[in-house]
Each structure stands twice: as structure tokens, then as C-alpha cells.
Length: 222
Image (cartoon, rainbow, N blue to C red; front, side, top):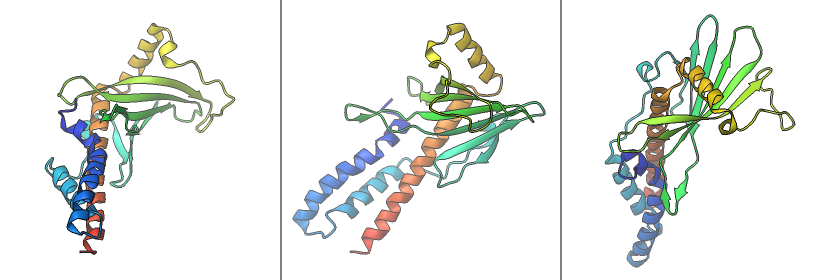
């Protein structure tokens, strides 16, 4: 909900634009030569730091059964792997684009792609999922499967290939079976919540770092 910190993070860019407009008017009256950008950026940094951003760290206990393959501090995604003698599960996730309700930014979703394959066998089963914030201020997330894809080999896709029906149009019983299939492989609401929360924190830290770079650049003009 909008009162939660996570929802507030989604509005950071919007707030910066508003501060820029306000600061520009004040700067013109005060004679500043940067149009008020520095003042607006510093105000935005102060506001963001009030939520105490720290470098996010995705730990093994946050994603039980998975190892973290890739989570670059400057990257937008995270890649997880779960592997045993009979199967490999890869989960790739990044934040979905911002959505608005009027001028109000909505809580960010995370887009997850789950790839399941057998050792030495080329076909790959892929699930597209969307992790979203549950109602309330608890900060928990859940997820929905949005599509199921079958690839004869990795990268096997094309505009002319039939990829199956829209997931929500499948028989409800089949939808439930697919959901249980993923849960048995560790893809559940806990994983979705941990991944989504981590990506939001990660973007927040990246945003503050970007603001500080702007501050340093515009400070040189003062």
C-alpha cells in the first residue's frame, strides 16, 4: 500500500521531478545558475536516506534450496539455481516497469522466468511468473504463473511457433497442477517475496547512488 516504504520507493522518480520543478522556480528568483537542480537533488537524497538504504544482500536463507549465480550490484536482475542429479531449476528475475493509477505509482511487481531441465536432455520447460505485493502493510508477496513454454532446446522460440494457450485460459485443474509442480521445486510465495523485496532494495540503493553522482556533478558549478 502507499503508506509502506516499498510503495514509497516506487514514487522516487516522480518526487524528484516535482522537486526539480519547485526548485527551478526558487532558483530563478534566487539567481542560481543550475535551475535549482542541485537543491532538488539534495532534497531527494535526504528524503531517500531517511529510509536508511543499505547495500542489499540476498542470502541463502532467503531463497531456500537455491544458490545465487548472479546478483551484480549495478545489474537489474538476479539469477538463482537449484540443481540435483536429476534436474536443474534456474530462476531469473527483474523488476517490472512502473505502473500508475492516475498519477499514483503502484507497488512494483517482479517478473520471474523459471527454466526447468533434465541433465543431458535438451527440452526446457519455462514458466513466466509475476510476483506482486499482497494487500496490507505486511510487505509479503505472492506470485502468479502467466505463461508456460516448452522449448525443444534453449533458445528455441519464434513468432511462427505455437507456444500454447494463455495460462489463465487453461483448465483450472491444470493450472493448479502446474502451480504445485513449481512449488515442489522451491518456487513459492516465500521465494517470490524474497526476490521481489531484494530487487526493490537493490534499485533503491542504485537510485541513491545515481542521485549522489548528480550531486557531485552539479556541485562543481557552485
